[in-house]
Length: 221
Image (cartoon, rainbow, N blue to C red; front, side):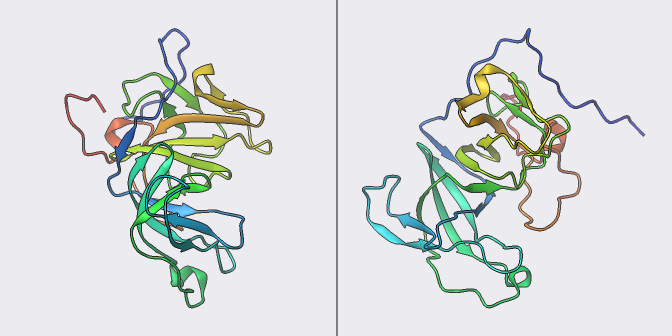
């Protein structure tokens, strides 16, 4: 059996740049989960702006978990996410799901989490780009508190996480810093797992061959 390759490490000798969001990205098979402390939930709007018409709301997590509402993320634009099909998994919540907006619309990406089986974040949506974040012995990117999904590119997500003071400090390059107080790190991450309460066998976003990406050979993912 071939030995598992060592997880990539930050190399300060490699040139890097900040993980800047593209103007608009299209997502492919990415499920998002909303963790919003507002008991009224999150407004879904007709466009990627607070000035556009409100269509409805997504509700906060429910049940003993509590478990958040999930939805498909279709597109991203300037930190906003176009979503569709919001709902709760009643097998997890243990109670009938309350009525909420289930159609297509836009929400702000703050407080949105994606299941990501990875400990590494890159400068671009490619494993050949510079490594910006290495979580080391800290938890992986999935289910991080205080997350923000900034953008997407296929099955890559541009994620911003707030460093958890109760976890081992992550290793990161200055190009990953989105803010200092509190410390928030931004990078492109692969290894999407769309299962809410378990892991996806064989998915590891640290490596191209185990990220389950539909790869364009010219992109070097």
